[in-house]
Image 1 (cartoon, rainbow, N blue to C red):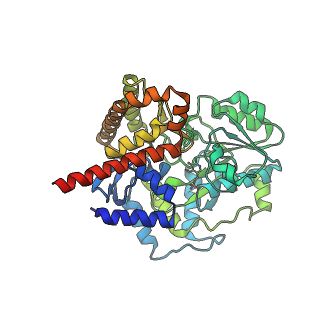
Image 2 (cartoon, protein in one colour):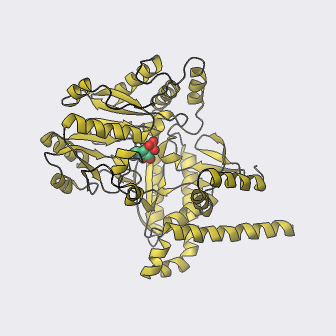
Image 3 (cartoon, rainbow, N blue to C red):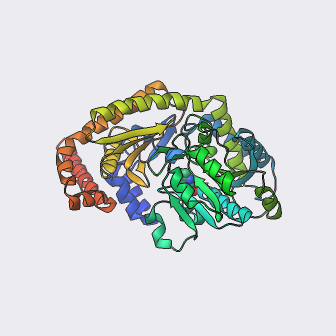
Length: 460
Ligand SMILES: Cc1ncc(COP(=O)(O)O)c(C=O)c1O
């Protein structure tokens, strides 16, 4: 276990070189873990010596588990021969990864541009859509999350992330997710692309309703717009199919992948597209439409092993089965706690619990962390707690997680006689739902806790 003084020194360095705000945020919610050993569905917190279930998985980076031995071995092996390589020049690992992605992607998505990260791939997708169609407009979904790079940020559904660097890419429109009629109203002859997550992640885990993706596909076919599926969180088995679009039997014109493609070890991303018009002629004329130092050969070798791991173990099937168990347990919990939980929803092992108030999300992160579960609320919807454990989880591990969640909801119930009456007063509710106020409040509670623990230790 890492001694307390060393932990404090680590936090001070983190604050000095990155951000005091991030340190305060993590500390307030008991999320200030120090990931040491990483294996299976979690990691050991060096600060407490405790094993934690990783229910966040960096928003879906660890489909094959933490420190997957096959992926690590592939990276070790690759180090003998490969390095980053030269982007734009071909090499065996890049060739192999492009071919493998084309082989497993839905339908005829078989053109592949390797990228550095998810936002990079989304930027490339939107540039390609605008260039190929010669049209300016992009339709995205309200509360969507597509990353923090330039074009991706422009289609991010949370104004808080965008406001400080406006003006961003113009001609972006938003329509509520799952609202086909509104999408129909917004799409026209100037629409280059409709961009959609097949299951919205950061927005608070919303699976596409039956007919929605099919409807968007039809709308694109009618108007000549391109359908772009962002499978960055949903890809590689997460939702119970290899790609979430497969649930609807829809083949998008472009698809972005990242996160778990790197096997939780080496970030790598890709944009795939179909060799159909206008994409085919335009990309032939603009081979350099997006340049990036992504697609490192080491990342490609890692990604190939991660894909093999997903395919050989048929991890999407485990995601479907374990996801059903988790949903069943959480639905029972929701029925018993209707004063706290509004809804449970998800697909495969992409599961969310929505609370009746925003401030319950951060409270729940805290309650879960105390019970050995590292979980984060949705970036664009703080009232929704996400559970995205690795797809390698066993039945017993899902049971352990469900028990910890039930325990944490029980812990919260004890605090509610104070919080719920306060939340009835609009001004207090606004204060409780304010992230800055939550960090200060939880930070003060944490300081009191640490002080009491010190006093107890001294008395012993
Ligand atoms: C759906 C989706 N798209 C894009 C991104 C951006 O990916 P990255 O953080 O690798 O840039 C994310 C990241 O969380 C995501 O969840």
